[in-house]
Image 1 (cartoon, rainbow, N blue to C red):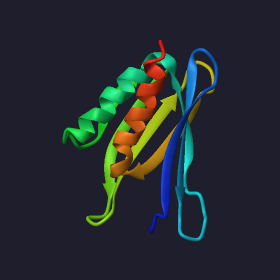
Image 2 (cartoon, one colour; image 1 turned 60 degrees about the horizontal axis):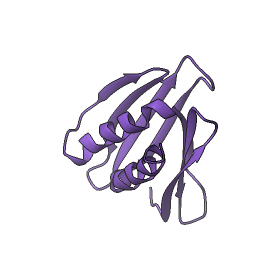
Image 3 (tube, helix red, strand yellow; image 1 turned 90 degrees about the vertical axis):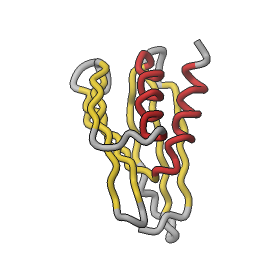
Length: 121
């Protein structure tokens, strides 16, 4: 899959929840991105989890952080690697299964955007 443009933004839903919005545009303008809801208390934990992948810790990993429950793993082809971030929210507000798949190169960008919100408090 050819990616023309990829970006993240983090939005505050309320005092306790945030939304990660991922945009991934193909050359013909189709947005293949998605979004995910996370609990404010888990912003730092999610940053630390993502940082492990930058540090070279790969393989499927599971991180339960109520009400969020993250599964992460690397996938794709040899020439195009992707990072898969799943959040299975069974409890709390906005329960759902959230999935974001993005280029490995975007991990530092997502960490920085999460950090901007976790540094507010």
